[in-house]
Image (cartoon, rainbow, N blue to C red; front, top):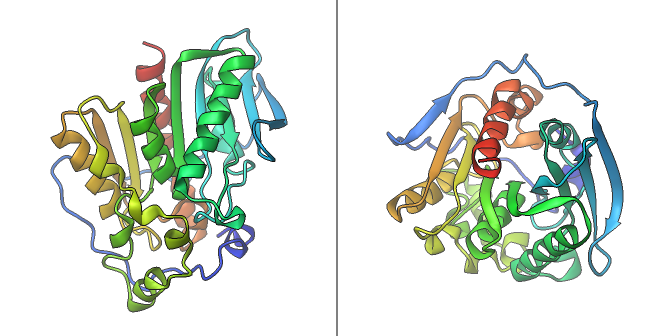
Length: 291
């Protein structure tokens, strides 16, 4: 587990018990070999660090060395609505960039700045404005990709920003009032605490599933079946809402996987950097940003 990330999340805890795994015929249960990992670095990719894109906010941009314009993938880091480190998931972002995408990892305001999800979405939109206005990216081929809190914001951005053509949501929440469903009593108490960052970020007031419509961009949703932070039922809820509205949505449940880089064990986290999972993400982006 990444202790540096955990130290940024006040009151962070895992559930001592997993949430019951929902059964749904429209979910693909996926078993991957976590020993087959994407490489730690990529050739043919240029990294541009610390690009200013807002009031005190920055982004890191990975671009292929080849001439653009390139499809743009905006990565939205997690951090429990307390942190938004643009340095997260560099290995995964470089893998996607090497496949021919400009990949921007963006900072956004959190509870540390007294912000709410409305501010976070505004920051993501401003980052897209900045990139489209001054970098070799294709303005008609934009995707958002987030994990955990970033997955939640990616879902909202995809459903509210008409420029977004595809959404990758990794173990993000949907109905945050039910975010401790199936977990132990300590998790329920933590979510009920008015000091909890979820409550201070105003996220109880915005459920992506409640605004899913037929005009939503295609969604790729992935969740671990042993996630002790966000129950798997959360991405399934959004998936069902999208499908019922007539939108394109694909939902994967990874056997044995936990909550990304802060999974319960290191072995569980390796699912998310496996060749199989990253190939699924790259294939999804290719279908919706390159066709």
